[in-house]
Image 1 (cartoon, rainbow, N blue to C red):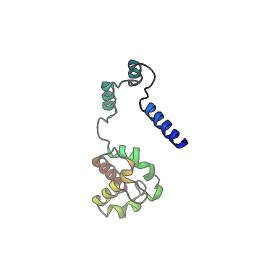
Image 2 (tube, helix red, strand yellow):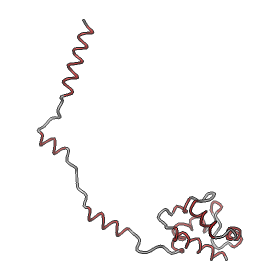
Image 3 (tube, rainbow, N blue to C red):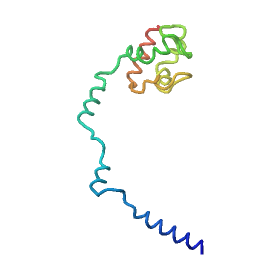
Image 4 (cartoon, rainbow, N blue to C red):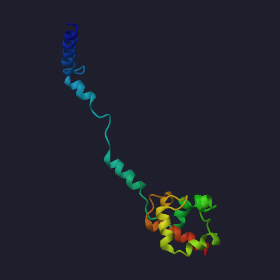
Amino acid sequence: MRLRFIAIASTLLFALSANAVPPGSDDEIDARLQPYGTVNRAAVEEVMVAAAPAAPLSGAEVYDTYCATCHAMGIGGAPAFADTSAWAPRISKGMDALMASTLNGINAMPAKGLCMSCSDDELNDAVTYMVDAAQ
């Protein structure tokens, strides 16, 4: 008898909760579900255009912005800028090997030297800038 009462009460509660409606009229509910604000797409496009670089970075600019962090002082085993003896064995492997290391990372150096926004051409210019300084 007790089990039957629990089953009937549970069924009744389930049926009542299945038809539960949030408080308020349909208009009030719709108003609560409206987005808080809107996006001004024209303003977003203006910001995106303003944030885009006007021209590619030069090799010196890429070096100063990204590469110098480690290469200026030889941090983490990076060949120091203009250190002929440190760069000589790397230069002897050729530009393709230097670019493969630059793009994929090597030892402590992460891929692209963490310049994920740099194009391959910009990175090539930065490597050329460092190689020229070491010769």
